[in-house]
Image (cartoon, rainbow, N blue to C red; front, side):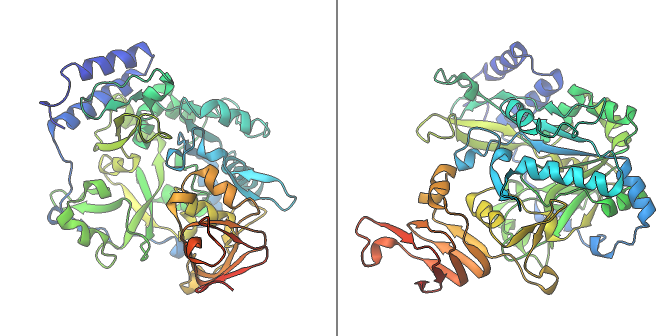
Length: 486
């Protein structure tokens, strides 16, 4: 999209709409900067010839932190969870973190938020740290989130809010870049600006200042749909000792890691920068995905020195110079026939290029358990993970011996949307501990006590005898293997 095709007054209309809605000035200026980048035709590509792989970083497994130092660092750490996501890719219109994800030993159904609250409270009991939890909610997740967390009256720390609001911005018509109008549901005219909005939102709400005034020095930030990112005293101790203003948690790539951001070192100045898939030139894609060249991917788990972060926010007025991410969707995520829109977004991890002296650490895969699709959700609900008394999800496979979680691939036609997925797994997730993978083609409903083994495959039910309507039923107690139902 160039200036020639954009509506001349699109930016002015968007700024007026944001001002009338009371959006923070820093967010309006950030949006303005990105809009101009969007219409300039700037690609934002990070070419392979201009960077070097990031290697030789510290490993969590090798840390030898004095327990007293680790406890002291955790005692000065606050936890921030990004909780603005609606799970629109799964057809949701409310906070993804409200989805049921596990069942406790007493039969209580637990959402992502319940597990997060459990992790925080357990870490407090174990270490004595105050460990405040502050969520960055969106205008569409805040009310439901606070209502869900009201069952934990001890969660809030005196003097600190339990949440603060992410900013919002207009969705733009894809063909003109003017703000979209959607009379059927005006709230759908707005979207959150991606997790790169963290900085403008922290600045607008004075969160960094309030944390510093309350005696905290470090901030651990992660996504609410990543239940692996539990409070970690050893990483807190390492980060405090490093003296770095900023650190990112990275994981070693496996064959399954073909997407996502990575950190690279810019040749021109030696500074670490983030390269997203969308910023990778097609000619460089093979090199970017090559685990022997770029061995890590970004978990989106970040650590900040609050003094350094506060100084940068004050210097820039909350408008950090992050790369643009253009996200194309429909104005109503649940209606693919509704008008195409562009959402202007940015990635919070891109701020690594802003902080001189930023660093990174390799963490185990257990700290990266995101749920982006129903494939991920089924895996997390299965017996591949156990929920400990500390509310951490513990793998039942031996990651140290090179074992990995099975790969789940459900037919998108029947399982992509959460309601369709739920209807087909009402009896619960199948056992996956003896499976290398589970591939489901076609429309199958699973009974209770189903077990998948090896490279388990279910092919189109219409090809099986007795399935004239094209649907299939996996019976209670059945075993699914490489040849289907045994």
